[in-house]
Image 1: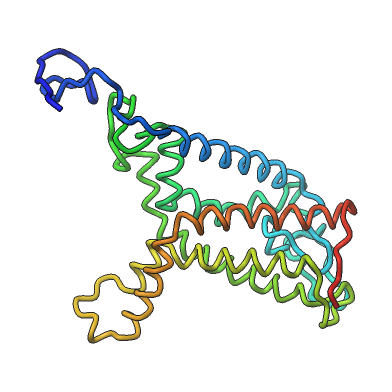
Image 2: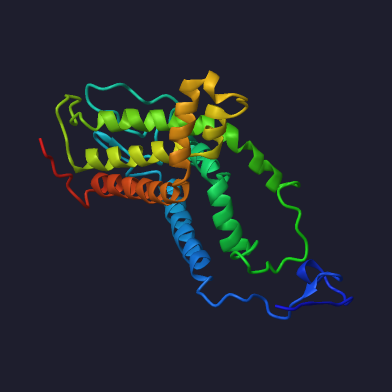
Length: 272
């Protein structure tokens, strides 16, 4: 396609000296569908998680703890009979403990490389899709405040691993009954197990994890164990987008399941 150079005035793609293409884009497919779905799903998750975070109720149904409120440290989190007393920090002065707990897993997701791409394109149109120009006049990337804070993603990764361990412990506790005795398994146990499995593979598929495992190595042959781990994490990393969405949905469903059981709207079926 022939283009012409025109002096003109403007900013961004209309800057003088750039190829003059009158059309905003030349794509004929439904390029707008992906960012639209992204906006819809992320908005729904934000609305739901905000409601649950401020609810400060119905997040514990022995032996299940909502992932939004774990670790369950407030005094209004009823411990299991015969189990450990989790009442460490008192009633939080009326503040929902989820508002503090969620800082770390949400910080990990918000600074995630894939989620950046998703909400940059979906909400800020930067750009909305490949081969579609963004409408912004200026672009500074992540070199200025507040987007420069995205660089702390690697540190949120360490917190994400800690919370994944805590949620794994919660999933194991799902095999106890309300009296604290082992040998219980209900539908909620499976819900928590699936959720933590997806959270682990999403966390380990992180770009930061891949760099920690195999980064700064000049010769893989001298580090066969790290190379094997790097290869495995690399395979997960190739599916980072799918794992990001799957784990986002699973954590919301796990919380909703605990809410239904804790509120009495649904009875947790037991397998044994």
